[in-house]
Length: 69
Image 1: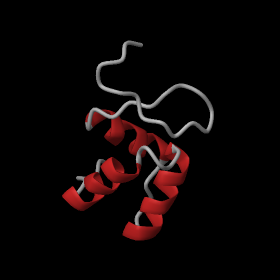
Image 2: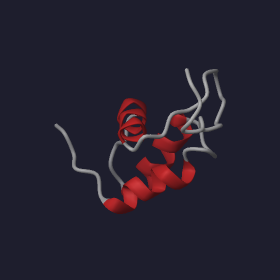
Image 3: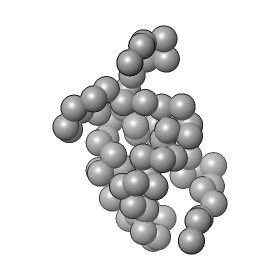
Image 4: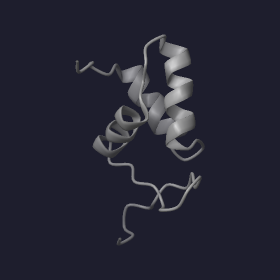
């Protein structure tokens, strides 16, 4: 079932996307909210917010808006 994300949860994604990997972020948000936030739901929400990450395993760096793929 789809769950509506609160603004606080979206802010958490915005503030931590460049610090945490997607897996770490989903685990921490799950602990904070008390609901199961999967890796895929975290990643999809991050993408909906317009935040893309650099490719590579374990890289936390956020891609700048004006960079090409």
